[in-house]
Image (cartoon, rainbow, N blue to C red; front, top):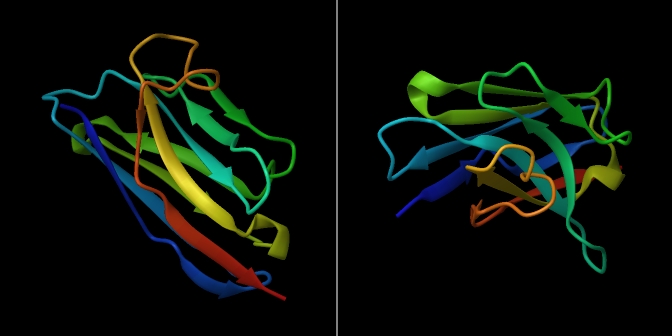
Length: 122
């Protein structure tokens, strides 16, 4: 069984940085497309960043372009989300997601983490 465990959330002030990490367990390799979604209260869950297996295809939502960076270390089965210049509107629960079918991560992830809260105060 595949498990995704996020860490790194917290309470920060406007302009601060945070780095989220997500470790994949249950497999001996890291064959997945992976990404980060977020969901604020009363809003739909949206993909903010994704990265393919090789790291050659990266997607960012317009709202985070230039501020967030997604990366992965396949040797450690870990994906990261570096978040800089945080704004109050970035406040949400952030979820790690993974998919083993190319091109499906943003539409229908196969696996989800439990979520980590990010709160940005003004």
